[in-house]
Amino acid sequence: MDGYVKLHEMLETALRQAGEEAGMLLGQGLTATLTDSLTFSKAAYFGDLDDGVFVLAVESREEYPGQFHLVFNLRDAILMSSLLLGIPAPRIKEKQRLSIIEPDDIDAFGEIGNMINGAMNTTFQGSLSGKAHLKLLGSKKYVPEIDPLTDDDPLPNGDYLMFRSRLEMEGQEMHHLDVLIPVDLGNQYDPPPEAPAAAPETIAASDVSAADSSVVGEVAAQVAGDDEVPARKAGVVAGTVGEEMIAVFEDSDEERSQLLASLEFTHFKLVESTLNADVKEIFSQGNVRLVVIGSQDADDRELAVCIKINALRQDQPVPIIMCAQRWTRTAVLKALKYGAQDIIIKPCDPDELASKVKRLCRLPSV
Image (tube, rainbow, N blue to C red; front, side):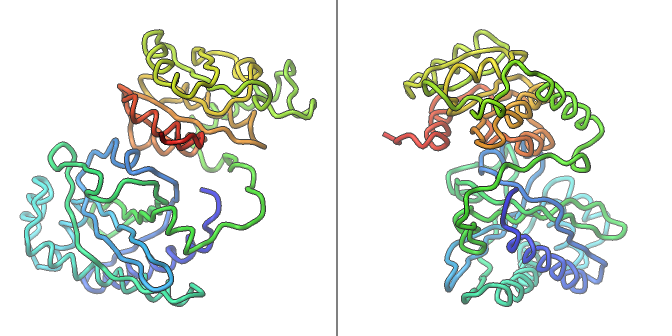
């Protein structure tokens, strides 16, 4: 995720301190290490959530008004609250297995939350130029396919900066703590520079697995070695000249037709192709305002299309929406890392797709 260097440093310090202090409260060695940061929509975050979560809301006051959320794996929350209450290990395992969180657990975890909030408060107040104050609000449990996911629960709809921290405790299997900060509030804490936006983040070899590296290298070689459309040499970025258009990549004829029908409201030129199509050739047909990639699984083949597009459009990034029937959390992270601005779970809802297209293409909502 580009930018937010100051916010990243603040949270890295605050979460490390919070882990140490919570560990002392629990009588256990607990560490919280910031490992990753991404931009997520609420729909993308909860779209493939396998485990239950426990969400703590934090109100930001004074000169930085807003609200963000601390999201714990439910089993981690049960473990920590149970340790604080002195519950025997076999009972803790049973509560984790059945996702049982009782009023005493909520009260106990509130104490842990207060300690984490205190560490964040200290760091934010010492790092921000204006007055800042954080207040811990209520908590909510959410278990997929059991609890309802609404516009406001377990947190409001919108786009979030996600800062993920790995939790580790000796002798215990733990997961992570996610700090979800609305983009608008993140921009208050760490305003973006006024200079023109930097080129999109490139994928370093150290950031991907060996399997991913082969895909990236393969695609990069294909793009670099193809001299048929020398966009940079000609002084024109690929897909930025001509009639405004949306490119749709999808192997299924039926689903490609459905996507095209859902995009007709834009009145843009719609260009369709399969996932194996020549991206340069497709982009040569007009000014590409948006790309939609459809598939059954979000695997390396679909992600390769993202890589090709970003290689062509490094100077002028184009929004990408990826639609797939089966998503894993790893696939979501990879899709966003490789350039997708949003994801949709198939079957695609036309209204949801339209909403995302209007936002990414800056089209009027009416």
